[in-house]
Image (cartoon, rainbow, N blue to C red; front, side, top):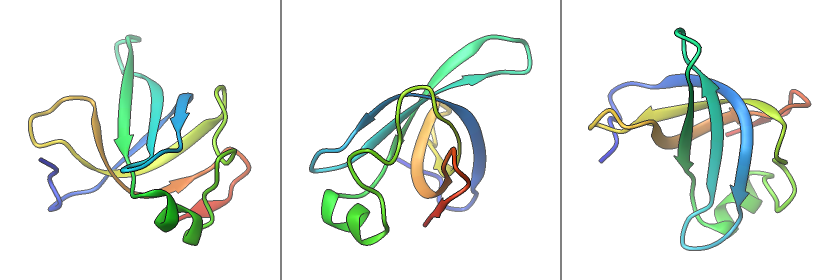
Length: 94
């Protein structure tokens, strides 16, 4: 499902952060080169793993601008599997 042979960085505005099992999801509005805004979904791990990495229920808030490093979807849809994220305050979570 994910292309683990490459990692891409996606900078966008948080639209939603779902802190739930079985996987946590981060949704970002990302402006493309042509000006179109595309909503990306980023699949993260489960809640216990996210907490161990320092990510909690309120780590990402709608309106925050973050940079997510992800393994993209193989089929080219806008999304991927979380590798690491730089939060709005500059904190790094990997």
